Length: 397
Ligand SMILES: *Cc1c(COP(=O)(O)O)cnc(C)c1O
Image (cartoon, rainbow, N blue to C red):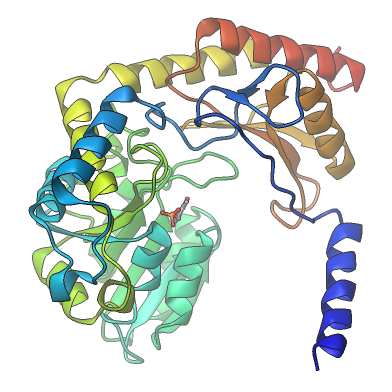
């Protein structure tokens, strides 16, 4: 039987390659960080495409905490949370996350993909409606698909269009607005103040995914509630431990007490998937302590973003307005974005070129992700490479 299926797959794979959408893995032979060693490459390369916003992925304090948790709590849990997979450390981390977001309770998942996948189905039925931003992450889209609630979609961060959805869904029992905090392609922030106002006016709940915003957005990096001062107005936050918060893995949902309690009863990725491993939990508790003690890492990130954006704009590049650590350097042309990324790699700088269908047609770009651990010298080297390649390919004069 496999022969026919094999031919089918081979054809599809060829189509993906011909469309230029085939994904290859780059092999890294060092820890994750601003400078990485790459297989079959002479010397190190600068990394500007990790979600390692606070530079914690190779932090020695987290590595020590992970080792200590392994020494005292073991390697694996071999259980889901509610059977015999909950240690004191899990409760401690959940409490630390609630404190960080100023929420009532938190539930951990193996990933934010699971947090979003297991969020909607336990809470809403066909009598309800989910109103979703058109640029929401795939995991929110999949979570919505698993739920029987009616679906409404509004244009990215477009409050008029959101209001239209709220009017159209007025006969539903409960409504929830679901949005990313920071959208990963433009680096723009969801206007949470306006979203919360509309939610109040039309009696809807609010959910935000803080994966790209927690640790980054807001005066001290505490996310969109801090930035827009909407504490107490957002009912549900989801987020990841795999980006600014250390970059290992794990996700969480945090928010109102009764909602989290219901997720512990009915959320399928919580009920039927393994507990987060002690080393990650121990290191994440340490990560929360580090962020509580000082705002140094976030301050450095903000400085680096400003420095990079200013220098690049000065050099003549067209940068989307960003309110996060994501800078979209606009090139508009799909092929140019791929050539540009390849030339940057030759200069020893890793950045990613994105084009349709990942971004709208005619909006191809290089996405740069900044990190608190990038030094001035590394930023200057990347900017110099951008200028060199930009001139070579006729993007700037
Ligand atoms: C990265 C990301 C996720 C997935 O997080 P994982 O913990 O890696 O599963 C979910 N939502 C958003 C908005 C993300 O950017």
